[in-house]
Image (cartoon, rainbow, N blue to C red; front, side, top):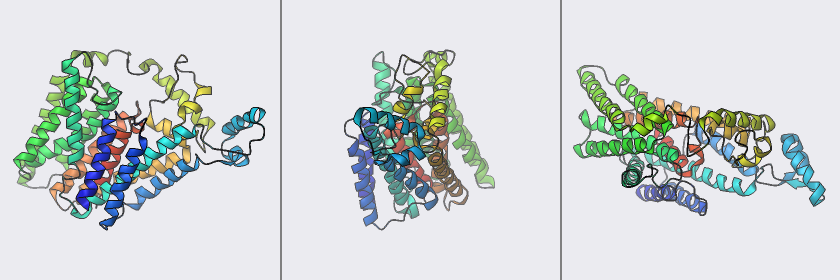
Length: 423
C-alpha cells in the first residue's frame, strides 16, 4: 500500500506541474489525487502526522471553508465591518440580505480551499510514508527530484532553442525557479552522501545530474530571487552538513567532501550565470510582473487590506477583491497578488489565522531540526538537512513573490515538510 500511495501522490504532483502551476480548469484533480493517496496510506495503518503541525493547519483550513459559508449579517458586522459595508450596500439593490459569506469571492475561495486541502493531504501522506522507514529513505525524495530535473530539461530546451527564458510548464519563470530551488538541496546532500562513502555511485550520479540541471534551469530562468534563494538554500544545507558531521577523523574527510561539492555547486552557479541575469540585478525592470519600484507600494496596499480585515480577512483567494477598493499601486492594472506570501495570507485569512500558520511552520522547522540532531542514521540526517535547506529557499523567495499560491510549489513544499517532520 505504501508504494501505491506514493505512486498516486506522485501522479497528483505530476499533474500540478504539467498544468503549468495554475490548475484553473481542473483543480479538483489535485484534491482527488491527494485524497486517494491518503486513503491508500490509511489502509496501510501508517502513523498519523505530527499534531503540532497538522492541528493548526487543519484549523486554518476549516476557517477557510467557513469563509465560504453564508452566515448571518450580524456576525459579519462583528467579524468584518468592512465586508458588512459591502453587504449592507447590496441591500439597496437586492432588498433584504440576511446572510452572506465572509469572503469577497466564493468561487476563488473554493478553488484555493481545494488546493490547500490537497497540500495538507500531501503533507500527511508524505509524512506517513517517510516515517519509521516504511519505504527506503530516499524513496519519498525521488519524485520531487525527478520532476524538478524533468522541468529543468524542458526549461533548457526553451532557453537554448528559442528566444524564451526557461520557464518549463509554468506560466511565470519565477515560479519555475521556485519549484527547482526546492529540489536543489536534495541533489546536493545526495551527492555528499555518496561522495563520503555512505551511498552508491548511481545515487551520486543521479544527484550530480539533478544538481546540474536544476542550477542551469534556475540560471536560465533569469529569476533574480530564484537565483538568490537557490544559493541561500544550498548554503544553509552545506552549513548544516559541515557542522553536524560526527567527530573524529571521518569528520575531516566528510567536511572536505562537503566543501568540495558545495564549492563546485557555487562555481557552477557563477559560471552559468548569463550576462542578462547579472544585468537584471542592476535594473528595476521586471517584464513578468510589476516593476520593483512599485513592489513596496504593493506591500503597502497589502498592509492596508490587513488593517481593513484584521480578524476575518477578506477571504482566502479573494485578495484581488479585497484590495480593489484600496489599491493605489499600479492603478492601470488589476492586482491579483501582493507579491509577498506572508502579507497576502494575513490579508486573506486574518491575523489570528496567520499566527496559526506561523505556529505550524515553527513546529515543522523544529521537528526537522530535531531529526537533524537526533537522526539514528546518516541517511535520515542528510534527508532532514535537505528539507531545511528547501525551507530556507522558499521562505526567502516568498518575501517578494507568491510561490505559495502556485499549486505545484505549494504541494511540493507540503511534500518536503512531510519528509522533514517524519519520525
